[in-house]
Length: 326
Image 1 (cartoon, rainbow, N blue to C red):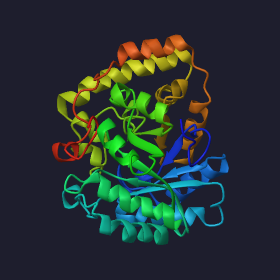
Image 2 (image 1 turned 180 degrees about the vertical axis):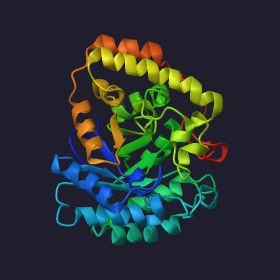
Image 3 (image 1 turned 90 degrees about the vertical axis):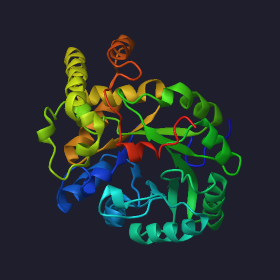
């Protein structure tokens, strides 16, 4: 097993910032900044953003919050999408000639000289992965980037990239109701010495139990376009949340804390915990420190077997962009 280019061990959790710039509804810039600052205040050191989020606005927000606080923070961002105000205006473009200008634009927005982890946000089916990854590896040689990561890939794509340059991190959706990485990726990554970060670790907030009706989503909330939050799927998935809440109550913790702790069990994954309030940061801090009895994991596995959630996690066009399993 090779040494990891970032640190000897993966973080307890990563702060995901996507929701801070409107993905699930509008929040104030003051609230967003306070959330990031709270994470830094309690000793958090891993922050995840992307150039796609708010068409670069999320990176700008993160950069402002890091002014004077950059030291010791592992900063990750991503490229590979074209910008657009609506989802149907965004496409994949990971041509190698885009790599350098995309990275330099992110560096400017973030106000930093180096990005710690630079991800390919999605594999572009129109561009050989080897070409994109080779161009990204040159960023490491230039000192603009410390390490490289991939999002939503399976073993085949991982091995193609790793043959050219080490893959420091793979990031995929991973939660009680999105367990696909357990099939063929987690063991592979552990053997290779790569980290795994699981985003949407609370099922895009659904596993917290705070959403009870589709109408609870704001009109601009992009979850409205996701099959798991629609019609009969929504009602079937509420039953899973109810069972999770009962298990959490039996343990004296919240559903969100139990769901987040489950992702971290036995060091399998570092969850990417999205937050929109400083209180969410405090909740995540408590969750990753919980000592949950092993029998609780067996009870959760019985409620949330592989494929338990009803409905796909993205709409049809977004599902086609996933390379998981390939």
